[in-house]
Length: 118
Image 1 (cartoon, one colour):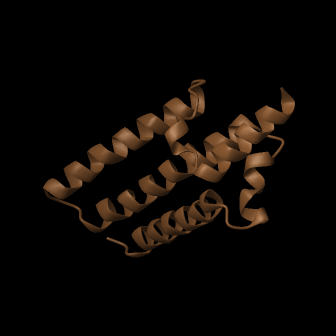
Image 2 (cartoon, one colour; image 1 turned 135 degrees about the vertical axis):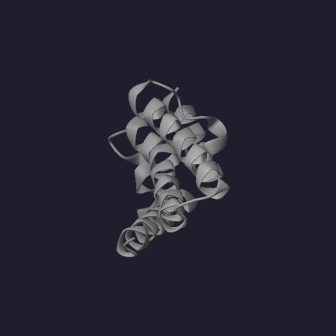
């Protein structure tokens, strides 16, 4: 087995998760830019659901690639399957992003925007 593939998957997953966490925490104006972007709901879905699921699939896939046998692979494979089902559902279906996934600063910002608009 090649070691390169799991290492690349792990690095990509951790890198994507770190970038996404930076955006989610929103400590700088650049990190919060996604919340006021022109893409609207798609950007929210991407930051709050899609990219975290992709990062999780990559990290779990690296675990499976390193451990080629055993019950751990079956359990992690099942978790990957659930993540991929959720990912597919959020990419294809018009499922709203659950409110509990939004960071507090984003909920407050959206509430202020609605108060000013209406």
